[in-house]
Length: 249
Length: 249
DNA sequence: GTACATAGTTGACATGGATCAAATCGGACG
DNA sequence: CGTCCGATTTGATCCATGTCAACTATGTAC
Image 1: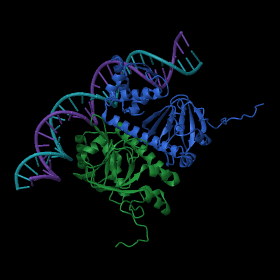
Image 2: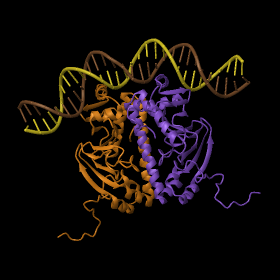
Image 3: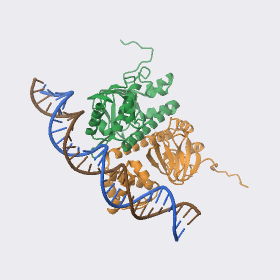
Image 4: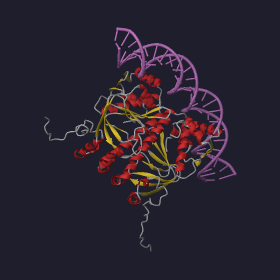
């Protein structure tokens, strides 16, 4: 029935980086057209996860890192006594699991914040490939560097900034990340709950809520539930003290 | 006058990883004897820095990462408005500058806390070499992963833990790092000032000072200036809540 | 040795945000 | 449509830690 197809086509288990709309954000960003094939050879089209499902947790043996294809992911560390520390939010085109290379298990737990699909890069194959493609290797180093920087920025936010500053910085970070994905930088829907925001920013939920309403009263944002509209980006930048140096970008 | 020397010998600008006492901690850790030569080929014996001197700062174009050979280094981010956030302390065998790969300039400022010597790895040559030596590449990924993890642990410490817990965790981290370097885990001299500790842990100097004296009154430590003796490690672990999961190890 | 600067300690007080409590909203489901 | 449960908001109170101020110790230059 199906006739032979002369052109490249993804097998069911294989992602097509060539056709992916995120190729200017994700790993393919580093590669020429013809090297892209080699990346496609190792990528596995991952499962789709429903909201709340774990992509992996700290007891999962480390095998792969994952690129978000659609949806969004939250990573967190769960301590022995059950406390959680949210370490990041990941949007389409971003790589999750870079903090675990060389470890037996994942160093954090990754949970889908909404219906989310991912591409899976088995780490052994990825390392092998980066050994052959210097640009890809460089890009990996660069991504990991940025992850370190982001985390330092977060530490800075946590140790030096007030609740308002932290929340302003997060909103700005999300804004610029939505923008890079060609979505509105001023009108978006938060993928995460207030609780996750609070945890990520080292605040109590109540504080987050209060700051949101304060911002709203000042006419800086408009928020109803997870729907957010940034009315005055400049004001947000003023609040976040260190203009545009966001915790994640 | 000088006669030809038949055996490998470090040129003035070249470090000898073969003879380095840190070879079980540093990059050589990943390599077989014979691959070590290739690492030696790219290492540059760095300058010696006096206390307070900058190895690099955020205006320095990114060229290399550095391994601490002796002494110790503090890294920090300086914001536009002059605020400082200490992001880490580095001891012999540890690598500084992994947060800047792929950036134009260093992402942080590195300052010698005491008289310090470093080995310099030009990043372009290092990347080239890791492309050829899979074990070295893997080790680099692993080191960078750990740096991300450390930073997440720090963020966690900052957002969830009390002053006492943070300081206990730092003391334990230093202790285990001294131990790995075959120095006493209970009797050491802090390389950094109270100020740096405070900044790193997101506290006021006064708070650090108070906690030190509190610990001392409880008989957990003995401290005179920078000289510290850990009298009751178990008690410290109790205090630091999440037993032994330190911010840096 | 004296003097000045820098680092560390201690005390008194103020406050941002945590905590506790309760009300309200919103969505899933029968 | 009504019910239920979790998420969010709002209010009242409390406390750990910051801030300000003063004092002490340590080190460095002359």
